[in-house]
Length: 372
Ligand code: GTP
Ligand code: MG
Image 1 (cartoon, rainbow, N blue to C red):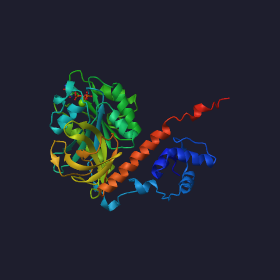
Image 2: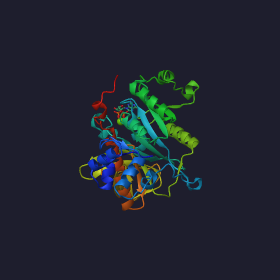
Image 3: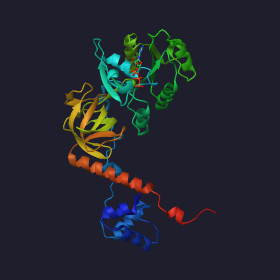
Image 4: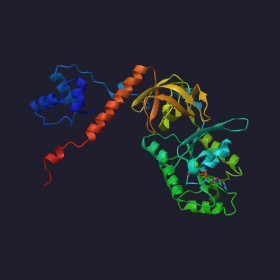
């Protein structure tokens, strides 16, 4: 059963917190307005004050996505989401640039990636398969998303520079990948350099229990050069092979659910979130809830900076029209109308406040010295 603070209950009943405390005192309970009471007590109080009780369960008010499973026949293949991880300067962004035929690295301040880049490429072969890539600065974003229960990554590409070898953030990336239980492909980069020693990288990986194919293990590895483009087709092929084994699918024909990859307040455009659609199709004009905010999709911008009308599963897209800045890992959920969006957002805001209140220290424990 749900617990509620006395103050929160008072707010809902439009009564004074102190009056509730008094009533509780008369019922033999010594509590402060910041303390929580159980549902039965709350109901007693509500009756005492002559209000009607409507017991609402969380799933009536909030959106539960777990229970809402798409039937098998609605599922369609979707592109894999690949996160690129590795030590600073090992060539993550360069590798992505080379794969996309773009040049993001050049525009970066000091050549350091500051925010997550989310891109989609289409393979050149006749099948024209799509692959979504996330370029992560450090690994905080990956960890943050995982901590919030959002596992958007299907495959990790671990980039290790062949001239520099295994470095602290390489190890960190290995640990994150293992903790997430996501398959890894090792891209040994900068193989064009005379001092490159890819074999040493493979050997050193053994110490971290990453056994690549060349060492009779089952982790795919590939020697590449973002500079010359050597091995890139091979890398893509390995990604697609891994993805095929995973049979990644999603229902594109439903209200969209998307994960916030990053968000910020843009001077000119207001709150902007980069999201990755998990399932369904996100459309311009859609009403949604994200975290404790509601909003309406004012514009969708793809990874080429172009406005698009919609974005399907595994597509990264920038969303404009948010009520506030959400957090990485928050789920954006499209709902049927604005009223529903506001209702859910408000409910979540109340819950968030409740949680803060419940966590706030009540001087109660310090009032009585219980140590003996
Ligand atoms: P952070 O975003 O700061 O973590 O770095 P990053 O991993 O994205 O590395 P980035 O792509 O910015 O590359 C770092 C440097 O290595 C740049 O000067 C690149 O030009 C260089 N570089 C990347 N790949 C290669 C390669 O295959 N060969 C050579 N010779 N240089 C490369
Ligand atoms: Mg980078």
